[in-house]
Length: 623
Image (cartoon, rainbow, N blue to C red; front, top):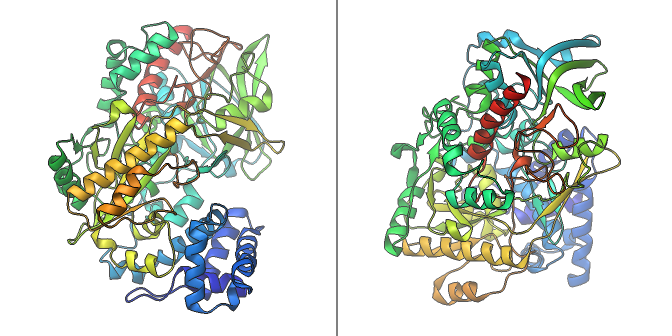
């Protein structure tokens, strides 16, 4: 056992009044989880612990493992305020927190159900699914349309084309999971359902990007939030593109169609939980708008783990709402197959070649139309690897992320957000300013990462977690990043946060603090290590006036967009208004990479509506 790793675990997670402290078990679980994620070859935990152990020598003259418990606590607070060391400490703390609180006894203490999920639902259409590992040799098939990806883009466009009578084949790199796989635990879910490659944007900060890698894509591991694109955003896109094709009036039938398929409706009051009461009370006091969020989960029972797959099968992600319809109409789906290249003949895309994940078998799919729907990071990385559709040099550029962060608050009464819809309530008071505020409740194993500190303060906060409320700030970013392809084929994502976006994030956090304070919060916790807790008017006023840097707030992204954007001019776009690439006839791109810019709201419904529209356009071309 690494003595430095164990000493850091004990300091980051000291024994509390109720919860056990960290130690050998925490380190062992962290090592096991990292080994699973890296396929058995990892050094990151040892590297982080050795770095921090030696860093203590600079301040205390001795390694961290040799310090007293009191000196370790002070050292953690110094590191949390250090612009360099806060990052390795944050990464190590995130890992330790997640595995430590992923414990049945901890959940029982808070009155939470630890094991979620139910039996796999009957699925007659599953006979239309071929799993990559079952292929025992190379094969070749023909169809009208091959769709690479099964999320908000691929799932919709492929199903719409199958409805029109075309022979469709879906290729999906991930696995098909049914509800018995969704147990509701963060570490296990991130290992099994999330994409790892290209999952951090690097620049003047580091922003983790969360993307699904399973049938259904990110629609199977998101909160089910369904906002229509605001009219003023559609107007802006039309003005920038010189067209009315994406106007509110022209897009309305597609939004209507998608909302019917998804059975979109406002979140049910009985599953909104205490967070909604807090936000409603605070917004009413301030005179701000607030409401339940429209969601694609008509049978939701508020189990609180949407981001880890829906254990009740209530959310109508594309693996439930769309793809089964296509398969019942004769479409085929191959899972655990990675697309390697687009086949071209006479200057036209005529199919794809895919490889078995973890094996040697190859599948060639010849088609009249090839649709890439891998997502805003995998799609451009794939195109760059083959040198396709990039005469404009725009493939991988124009990346927007909708950066987001969280503010939590402590109340005198129980909130228990983890027993309700995680993102069931919103305030769109500042949406025209590029700020969306929405619910961010989380179960214990991820909720610990909502606090930008460790040690005794962390354990005190977690032992009051039933009285905590958390609200998210999502911004429409002016900043733009880029996706490149590394030599080993993995995506490299860069993104530099502009001053305007830092200010917008700060303003949104202040807005949330105002809501919580108006609702009676005793203490607020912005995800900013140098200002980790706010108590009283003086501290809150200082928070209002502070000038944040891009490195101050901990940010994440769930909405990468724009890297193969649609446009009328081949010089500054990748696909035309029919979603066909300007450079290669027969090759279409239909996913979040097409968006002309950030829509200011969760983009799921926008991508789906544009994908339904794309299906009509592709059908017109196929005849």
